[in-house]
Image: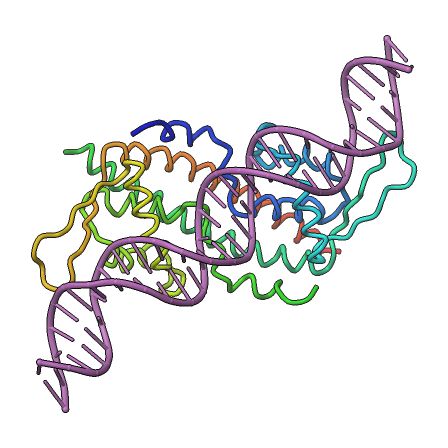
Length: 127
Length: 127
DNA sequence: CCACACTATATACTTAATGAATATAGTTTG
DNA sequence: CAAACTATATTCATTAAGTATATAGTGTGG
């Protein structure tokens, strides 16, 4: 069929649902952070620079603040343009705990699927 | 703060992106299947009955056929209403291989995040 | 035989997550 | 002062998924 089946592997459309949000909660867990600076830290979570979408990041942070998971204030007098510095809230920490549970389930599902995949493709090759 | 932070754990909005699609490809890997029947099989992938959305299933199957990952034909003369029976294509098998790669990456990311989560929350409790 | 429950497939409407592109503005540096 | 850089924000479009509803054939009990 047309294109699309090779494309999709290199496409950036495979961020797991709301995974960025969880990463941000974890990054903010024990120290504050601001948008641009968080991008660099996200690389340590296995994100490539190209994968990281600045718009998505800022949008996500604002959404999280609206939901009360983080709070923000404008940084006082550092050098360079002013930064909106985010801090995690108690609600945010609880939320992260819930996410940990969800991700554990996700992980188990992926593992189960990959296992079945191995089984089936190995049978295939044996024939 | 309102509601929403407890709700979200029980909500059904946590299907991983296109995970159903991959499950379907795997289920169809070595035997044909039809919509309604596939639902029961999906339970073995860790899906609860409530999580499984009939509309989503059929929609996904039609989309996959449009993309050439599966092909379908109407079953000849079984009892009960006629069934559209799906079969995986070669393109579908290749697609599944690619998904296996993507899911391996997803799994690794989740593991890394959960590890960091454990670290941080253990430090927190020690204080 | 007809109403009803059940099996099976399909589509319309809506919401939510995300990417791409663009806008705005202050800062630093040459 | 112009250009490059840092930083934040918003608009537009696309895609995935949930909810609700539509359609229709089949089998069964009264």
